[in-house]
Image (cartoon, rainbow, N blue to C red; front, top):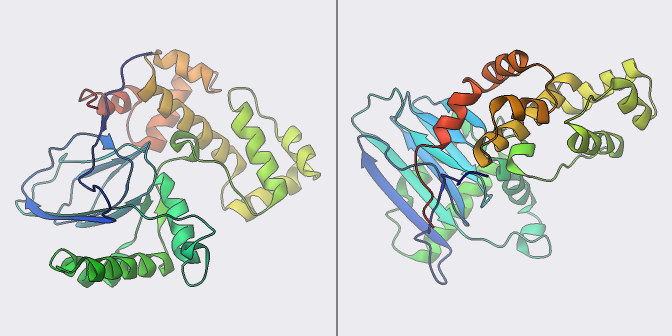
Length: 294
């Protein structure tokens, strides 16, 4: 097992504080890939061409970017990459709220916020329409001197984001080590089976039998319920585990490929690059640019 090269950040959020706000202008991103115990909402503007890495997701962002992360184990970084801006603005809000279902967040009108926080364990990226809806509140947040009013303004931002449409999760559940959930018991049973047996051949006939349906009917049911083809879902689960192994182990790419259910290395490399935008070796290199600091 090789040494992890991801910084575990000691957050500035200390003691009894629930909110830490950093509003800064800079010419480039230099902070390495990291994770931390507390939740984080990160806003970036004037940063077109920056590469955002959250778990096994890698995307080149546009002029604006807003991401919520609520997992202590989810690595993330914003890299300079192709950004030429001379005035990048970044607002980072780190916070520590108790989101237990038996407290305030388990009741109306906070249920939508709790659901959003749950989704953000994989990293949650918001569309431009949502960013513009909360832009003024974000812009003013660091200038609010009274801690109570700053928290109330931030809660308003979170609430507005939780009601917005078009957000999407970034890391795969298998990479982020997030428990699989689903409203349908049949779909949940199938997803759990795939999650346990991804390294072996997963047959449509086996899955459809588990659901008590014909193969063709189950394929339609799965896509209607999840919005994804069954084959794509299985590939994404396998790629998530493969990505995690690329980061956490020193196994060869060939070993990882076969351990994650791909029976052909060239096929694995091709699918990985199509889905992730880079080769497995490039993905591993992006995570191995810095040494761990605890």
